[in-house]
Amino acid sequence: MKQLLIYTPQVTNRIRYAFDLFFREQLGIDFLLTTDLEELYQSKDAKFSYSEEAVQGILSFGQHPLLIQKGIHPQKISVTEYEQAKIFFQLKPGFCLPFDPFSAAFYLVSRYEEYAPPRLDKHGRFMPEDSLAWKNGFLHMPVVNHYILMVKKCLLQHFPSLGFEPRNFKFIPTFDVDSAYCYLNKGLIRNFGGIVKDIVKGNLPMVKDRIKVLLKYKKDPFDTYDWIQEQHDMWGGNPIYFFLVGDYAEYDKNISISIPEYQELIKTTADRASVGIHPSYASNDNPEMVRAEIGRLSKVLKRDIVKSRQHFLKLEMPKTYTNLLENDILQDYTMGYASQLGFRASICSSFNFYNIAAENRTPLKIYPFAVMDATLQYYLKLKPDEAIKAIEQLVLEVKKVDGAFVSLWHNNSFSEDHEWKGWRSVYIEMLKMINR
Image (cartoon, rainbow, N blue to C red):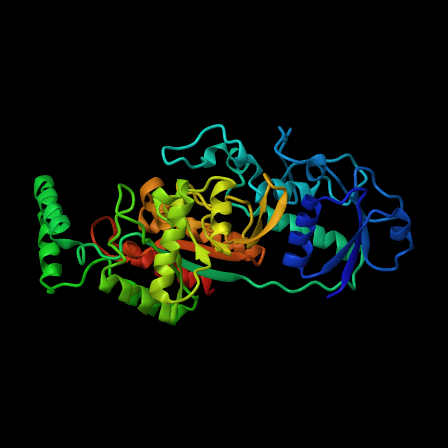
C-alpha cells in the first residue's frame, strides 16, 4: 500500500477519522499526517495540504472549521451542485475542489444533525424530512461516495502513478424475523384470540388459513426461509438474519425463544447464513435488556453475537450505539429510514461509528441499507411494479460508485398472502437487476 503525506496545521480525532474513511477504508491507500510545512515541501512522495489557506506549489484541499471543532454547533449550510452531486461547506477559489469534502462527509456520516433533532416521530426516531439530504433532494444519492471519487480524481491528476485499491459492487441481503410464524407455536390463547378477532372483522379466509395451518394441512405463510435460501442459491448473496427474541410486548410480538421449534429454526438458519440479534422495541431504553436478549440468542447458538439491527429501526445518537458497544456488538445494520428509501448517512459503504459525544472513532462498523420492504408497502404504498422501479434507481446509484447495496426484507413479506401477494416477484426482480 502506497502512502500519502498530508499536511494540516492541527491534527484532531475528526481529521483522522475522515482521512481514514477516505483513504485507508475506501481508496485503499495509507497516509501520514504532518503539521510541519517544511516536511511537506521536502517530501518526494504523493502529498497534499489540508488547511484554511492553500499552500503555494502544493495540491491543496480547503478546510472548513468543522473538523477542528468539538461537540455540536450550529452549522451554516448552503447546498449547491458540483459534478452532478450536491455539495456544501463551499470554499473560496484556489483549492482542488470548491468545497471541503472531508468535513461534508464527516457531517453526513457521523449523523451530526441527529444529535440535536428538532422533533421525533411517534417511535422516537429521527425523521428523514428533517435531514439535510431530504431537504436538498439528495437522499437517493450516496454523495459521500462521490466526494471520495472526486478526491481520488484530484490526486490522480497530480500523481498519475498513485495506486488505489480497486473496489467492486457488493450486495448484502438482510432479513428481520419479527414474527417467525403467522400461526404456529403461538399457543392456545393467542390463536383463539386471533380467530375471534378475524371473525369480528369478517376475515373468514384468515380463519380458515389459521385452522388449516394448525391442523398441518397447510404450511405457515411466514415460513418462507427455504424459499429465501433457494433464491440466493440461484442468484448469489449471503443472507444475514436478525432474530427478535425479546419478551412479548405491544411492539414485540414474536414467539418465545424458549419454544423448541423457534430454537431449531434459529439453529437451522445459522447453519446456512449469518445470524444477528434484533434488539426489541422496549430494549432501546434499557441496556440490561439488550444484554439479556443477546445472551438468549448466544445461548441457543453457542457462539458470540456480533451483528445487530434495532427493531422498528429505533436509533438514538449516540445512546443506541454506545449500548451495543457495551455489549460487544461489532456490526450494526440499522442505518436507514423506515418511511423513506435512500441513504440516511449519504454513503453506500460500511463505516465506523464516530461518537461525537466522546469525540472518538469506535470499533462499531455501520452497514447502511438503502431499501426496506415495509417502506415500499406501508409508507410509500407502492404497487409491486412501482416498487421494482424504485429499487432499480437505488441499485443503479450504488453501482455507479461500486458501493454495497444492502436490502432489508422480512420473512413474512414473501408469504404471497393478502397484502403481500405479488411481492416475491419484486424480490426476484431485485436479484436479477443486481446480477446484471
